Image 1 (cartoon, one colour):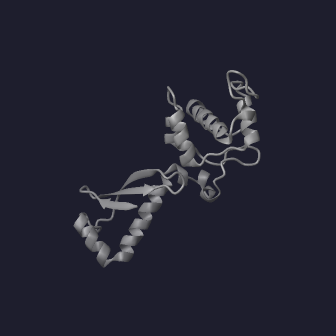
Image 2: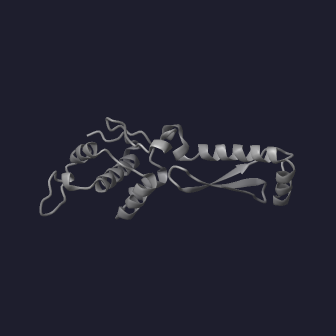
Length: 181
């Protein structure tokens, strides 16, 4: 994390999310009149009153993280487990807005879906994913001369299709509950 004091008295913060590994920027305005208003003053304050500076940095990080989708209460505690679905296929985590935008835009989104699949460590329970995708009727259960069947797809292909459809559903309806056929 880096905190930089800007000329207008705001602090610019860059963090890397522990969950999605995305870097995000946040600008934090200090309301305290006695807080240093220049980079040099901030460096002096950091050396002379490390406790106050550390407290400010901690508050800045907390506020910045609270605004990031992965740190929302919907994703709380899931960074360790990585679980995306419960045993019934209900969604446990929130898909980031950038992922939704990238994976549901017009044209081919194969590259974006592959990227976000890795970034989010998005995985699906195989049986639930097959039942969910079968409900769309776009893929045969078994392979034929034209398509690879759902039963013959590897877990990564199934997860890619689920993530793509989830992002499209969220973009169109504003919500997605999970692998409910």
